[in-house]
Image (cartoon, rainbow, N blue to C red; front, side):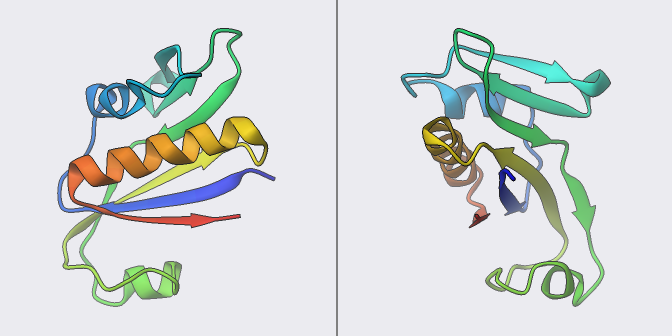
Amino acid sequence: MPREITILSSAPHDLYAVADAAEGIGSADSVRQIEGGAGVQVVDRSGRDLLTVYAPRLLSTPGEVERLLPAAPEVSLPTYWCDAFAPLDDDGEAGVSIALRLALALGAVCVVED
């Protein structure tokens, strides 16, 4: 099973924000769109997936974040919900680092579940 990562932000991210977050992470080599643009993947030189980040969805219903992710801290609504996944192995550590850097750049909350 992969690490499940949720990013809750007041603004949506794009491919460029993910690429910026991956910059400087040693094993990250490139960023590509997947599934017809539904997601973005950061891969290493061999093409191995380090992090997959799906398009954010706007949530505006009170209580929805708490229902879907009880471990999340309180966030203001509306908020953008973004699902991301990283491997459980050492490559996944690079993926988690990228997700945390993305959240930091967005001023977002990032919840990592193993």
